[in-house]
Length: 330
Image (tube, rainbow, N blue to C red; front, side, top):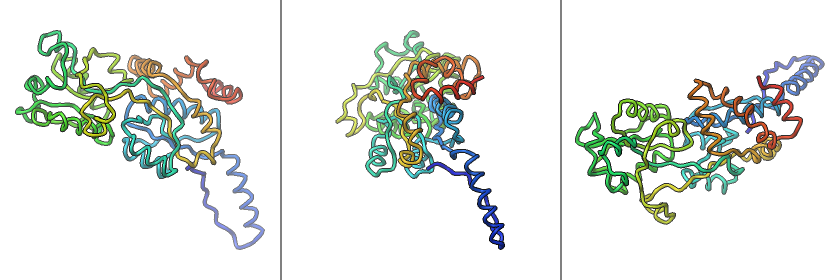
């Protein structure tokens, strides 16, 4: 639900004074704009990057104030369904299938369609472990128990270590279910990295030292474009198997834009814009590489995108909105 500016008014006893103050208040609200749109600022780079693109356009093109609420998948989706958050630019549909379907059926959220497709997620090892002869070229999840000693957990050397993601991500829970289904709990401990940054740091640190690493990651991320990693193969995705015990690889996951239902009536122009908003995984990866190489912020990357993909984003908005956005660019 869009947050409206609230101003405290002390009503005077004198009726005329009260009327004058009320009139002044109404004028103030009208001048101060349409209210605040709240984004789910999920804890990974691509989501925060897309938030800043949409936020820049909505702030400068549509005159909304913008607020970004940081957090993990599960609590932020609950906030979206409850109306405390208006927009999520990255719902990983397969990961959040049950929660998304439930919220749609309850009339709490509306799925506006894809932001981008072509994403991947799964388990990885550094390619140099294959090149060095430590692992076979066709390494699979079935092979991992016999190689656990290569990945010894420094806190428990009787088992290997698997690096998982943020405890608030749906995919982190799925990885735990897959681990149990594959029987990997007998030979590996799951180390929950705690955040996207911590997961990336563990992967990058091992790579720089040419050390073993086994864990989860996904695309698009800058780190996956930067490091040479090999996928640990799983059985091909099968919906029936997935629904039963997760004992198969991930399907390619469409990434959708989802909004709280209240926007349909309160801000139809925002819904129209976000319905047209669509990028690609490749565009997103290039922006994340730009961020890494230039030590740029999410805001910087959004400006870079708007400057370099003008022919794309101007199709999402009217010509007058496009003019206002262009005028706001540095």
